[in-house]
Length: 94
Image: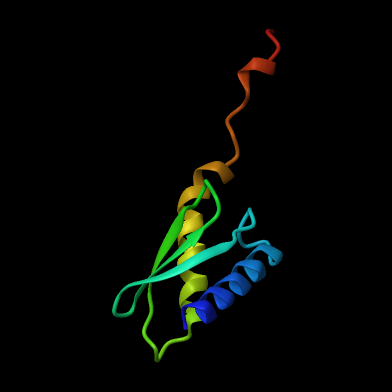
């Protein structure tokens, strides 16, 4: 079952990246069950090491994982996506 979740997680990550919803490609490295209905998906990426997913069998794993990844990536990229203030290094003195 964990291998199936890993493959499904990878497909979600590829979809998110191709849709432009995440700014960098992620690769699902390993899925671990840490408690009933609780999973950690580990990535091979220094920007985002893993996400913790609460998922029940009666829910769509794809949907739950998709929302979890979007929320987590949003927290780490939001400050980087804001427009920078005027760069004073290139400003000319009047």
